[in-house]
Structure formats: structure tokens, C-alpha cells
Length: 164
Image 1 (cartoon, rainbow, N blue to C red):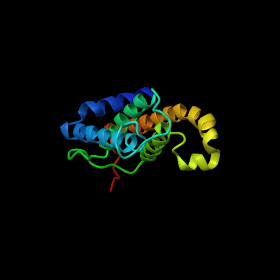
Image 2: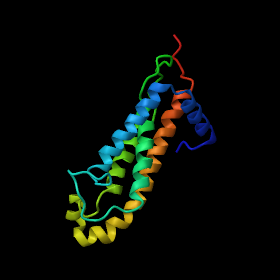
Image 3: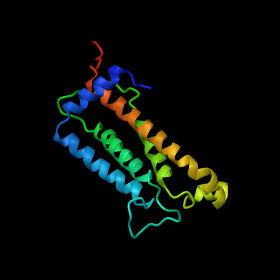
């Protein structure tokens, strides 16, 4: 993982260099993520979806953390005109995608998930799956944070160009 002090420093510098457009994309991305994850799981109350098991207290902060980190990751894909694109590297894009999917399973209703019901049954979903969901939320947040850190660190890294 890229959690060295140098990576954190680069990520902070990248965030300080963001312009209004990138912050706007981060905000819109966070809002879209909150709706895309929160509405079908009924953490965000709506008339289209419901849940058999009440929302847990930790679902709300998990959704907020997911939305904020996903918004930051999404905003790192906005290319700034003054910054040339560098070579392709391991930029954390897959980590962000996996973290986003895991967040959906983390905050979702344990007995509303058809896959879990088929594999474990209703009592297994409540006995085995539900206790794992907070851990999935932590794993999801960790993956999204790592993806954001990697993507932000790349924004301030000096690209190496091939010499002729």
C-alpha cells in the first residue's frame, strides 16, 4: 500500500492545487455515489426500495465516507489542462471500483441480498452475513482511501518522459 508519509504529502499537495472544477466534480460524484449506493439499500429513504431489516446506525457514516472518498477518486480523473498525461501506472482505479462495490454490500439489507439468501438462507444472512457487514464497510473505506491516495499522489508526481 502507498501509505508512506511522502504519499500523504503528495496527496495533500494535490488537493490544495485543485481548482473549482475538480471540487465540483468531487461534490457531484459524492452526491451521485450517495444516491447510487444509498437509494437501493434504502439507507437513503425513498419510495422505490425498502428493507426487511432496519438500517443500522453505522450505515450512515459508512455511506458518507464512501461517498466522499468516491467523489475524490472520481474527481482525480478530471484532466487539468496544464498537466501533461504521464505514462500508465498502477493508479488505484481497480481499488476504487472494488471499494465502491463492497460498500453497496456493506450497507445493504442482509436478507434483501438474493445471493446471500441463496448461499446462507435468511437465518444465515442474519447470523453470519450481518455481523460481517461492518468489516466490509471498513474494507471498502480502506480500498477507496488507498485508491484516492494513489490517484492524488500521481497528480503531483513528476512524469518521466522518454528521451528521443
